[in-house]
Image (cartoon, rainbow, N blue to C red):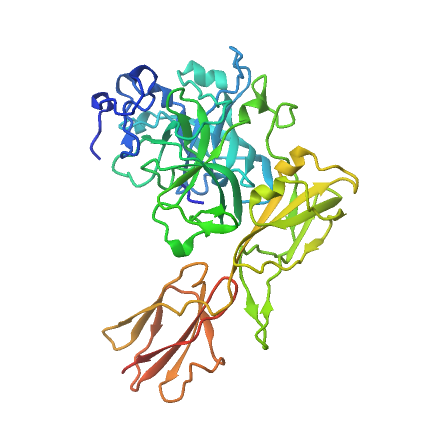
Length: 505
């Protein structure tokens, strides 16, 4: 996921250009949909509704990493602010565990409110106390408790943002307020506007996201993650900005920072699109100003805990291979795990939504040191493993269980060698050569090389190749021609055909 971790534009002079939007109810300040994001300076207190949005630094140890976050209204309709202050941000800003819910973890970072243009010397800093709950399993949300009370921030004039209790409809006008990087000359909150373009299930690396909002608001960049996505009329939070395809190449779709949409079992890249995790349901989890995910009204995802096998690293990309007789060999899930329930059921499907159906799940099996090793395929595309925990063989598949499984993804590529190596080779002043491999997941993942006298080295001979992980490799000058042999490997460990380059003395 992208960590989404100037001249001042006076919005008072911007005309009302959003169709059907009146000045009295336009929190977009007249900004035209899909136009460039504008910095907010809060002159004459005109941007006071966004004093509650700030720049989040989750950890003291990583001051270079920041997200955006917003103070949320935890009073649930009560006029009394009796609990601590909570902020809402993206789950990936504080946790990278794609399989589990993270909770009750101390944090030592801070958030700076009043992060307006020209006001960086007077921002209001609040220390973080603990990560209350974070998930990147299906959703991308985190709730953080501050080391202060909500009332203390209200006393300082910061009004929290309310979380909507209604799902936004397609075409609803949105605004996004956050702190994107890339504006070091004029750091500030920035406002952008765009319509909601529907929803999509996403795959990004090992993360499977369901029902994310899609939109094309401008100005999204590293640091924008966690920004509140707001209904333009009510200024209520409808989602939290998660990821984007801005600047993404088609060849990298479904990889880190390059989310792809899941369409009938096939990966689809939607260019220049941003996605946000819906916030619907979060408001039901606050009782008397305190976050309580166990409240009967709370509709958050379950806390089913999965532990992967020792030293196992998930790889969501594999390839169909051919044996010595040319017969198809399908990859397997090879998924070792344990759950905190005694039993589990599973099934393989082509879209994450199919996990919600109770049909075709396996019989209950032991969930301690379990292994799912079924074959995957045969068609190229995306496959999803749905895993639910059960307490007994007779436990019925309740709707809550079906809504919140662990989902494991794998993309299957057709058989064949991976792409040929792509190298930039430059002659140096001393007669040597600088070799720069082009890396591009999932197909150009690892390079191997060998070199030697041009008349003796055979690139077709598999012996002698060694992996090279540096971005630049130096080959010293020699008095006679050299041959450089290279192979590329994809993330399924499939090799390319060898490439041969002749290096003259």
